Length: 153
View 1: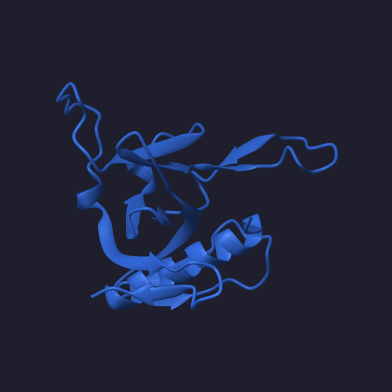
View 2 (view 1 turned 90 degrees about the vertical axis):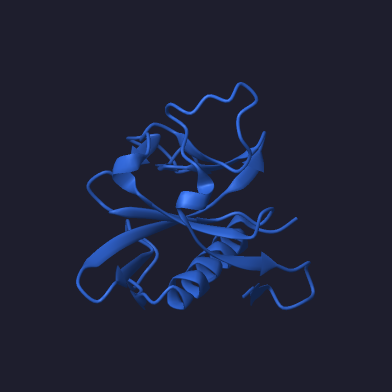
């Protein structure tokens, strides 16, 4: 089983590859205890980005929109949102190879968010976020023992 830190590192690498391919300049904060994983530059604006790993569940890619602190001894807060800390979430879903860039204002900020890969069975459209709208690239994950990531063109 892969260590959670390694999973996060693979996700961040996949996001960086897709962002570079999409034309963004990327800056990385120094240290582990920053609220943003990356800063992106589109040539006109800088924006803070939090990277997350998405998982394909029931036709949607789901990802966390808060940090968990329950594993710390005596946490004052169990979960913390990113509302004033970042402008975007970027996430990679190993099952779909998709990398997505989503403005934080378009997401619920409780626990997790989802982007639809498949249409809902009831054909509902209201409140549904289509993954294709936010996809910025594809980065395929490889099995353990081989190079971790490749950029799919």
